[in-house]
Length: 177
Image 1: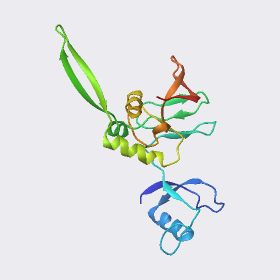
Image 2: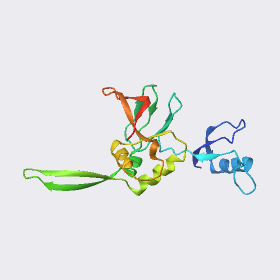
Image 3: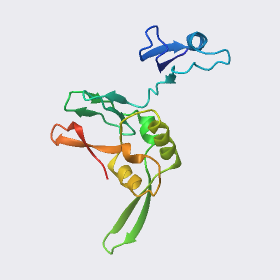
Image 4: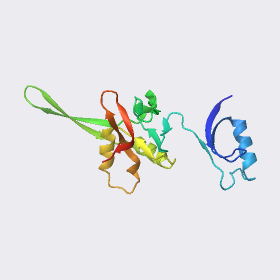
């Protein structure tokens, strides 16, 4: 039997909780809190928790996610945003295009970062989940800043290191372009 984590307020006290449910338990939840057509009644929600998208809530209440970094982030409130798994990191890495220029004694490589469709689709998916900040690599942030779009990419940022030696990040200051 397989199980999946769901964030829901379909609980006896109607308070949000993360529940690990089997398919049968999910069906029972929808029967208890839903209408005859199989939809949840107004005011109730049940969303899959995307376990491969590391997320934490900082002490100041900000919900922060790690978009694709293969390393964790430790904040000054002692919360740790976990690293992304290798599959996620590879799936949502920027595409790089190289331009080689003969410079005589050596070859100069000019790197161009390219946002892929899968990156843009994943960012759009995360934005609607109600997170406050999406930690992205700086090259990705720079490419997003170049976009001329009405899309709400203002949630994308980089961490602000308080100490380069310990790599502790600020929980109240973030870098934007």
